[in-house]
Image 1 (cartoon, rainbow, N blue to C red):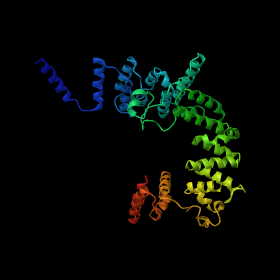
Image 2: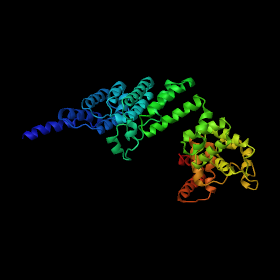
Image 3: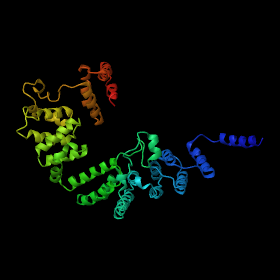
Image 4: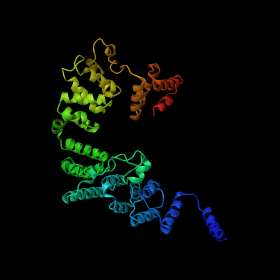
Length: 414
């Protein structure tokens, strides 16, 4: 009797509630406050995911922030992001100050991303300065750097479920912004060449507190400031010419630019050889400068030891405007008896596979060069198949070409 009297009005009232997640959050919040429940990191992460795209009411988000602060609940990066997007960045900074110190560096990187995205780079700068000063005070008091003794982002699980429950700084794929927050902030704070020392000093201090992934980005920023703004091309070349093989793609590009500036042919060839080994194309302007330097070297020709590498480099970048514009000169790197180089077009029309055409077409379409992509697409029906993957590509493209369905052919590679 009593049970029925209690349940029926409750059911009736809930039947009037529309099934929206905002109203569900209100009931969830009320239940936690009235009944009590242990709050974990996962609560803030999942709630942050709901609010992170600008949805939900700001006052509801503030209620959750107040509850998390009162209950000393770990606050995840997603919740911080949602606060910044809802113009509650001051609340986010207050919550960040209570973050587990072992993750503070990566959380600051996340916050810097969100703040720069909202053009609050001055606030982001103060956050980074506070982080570096906190690191310095730890070292002066005899404490060790927590970034080296704690795994932070470095050893997270491959499972999103585990990461979202255990790592405050974790951001699922699609939620991370496409730039380094700390690096972008420092570049805005020190935009002129004369400030390169100040920029590097702050970048290096910040790098001591973050995980390896962010640390690598910050060292790239430092390298760029040191070489390009500080004009230390010769010094960087001297420091890295012997260890070029261990450099990241970005630092390898800096070394190649330094070698070209100093007209160091040997280091230039070493860098280009590594690009070939990694199967990475070069930016148009960098490729042109490199090929012109090689063409100006009288000792490099079709019989030299480096000719094979250079031919592979040309093949890898054959769709570039540079290779096409220099094809007459580049023929010197091919043996005279080789029919592939018997005409100016030979350098561009080297034997290819469907897989290499597939890769090059995708690159061209990303650069909005659809006419050049169509030229390569027409070659696929005449190219020999080597495996099942290539056979699928050939069948689909051959069908499109036979119907003059060029739009369908282009869509296949997008």
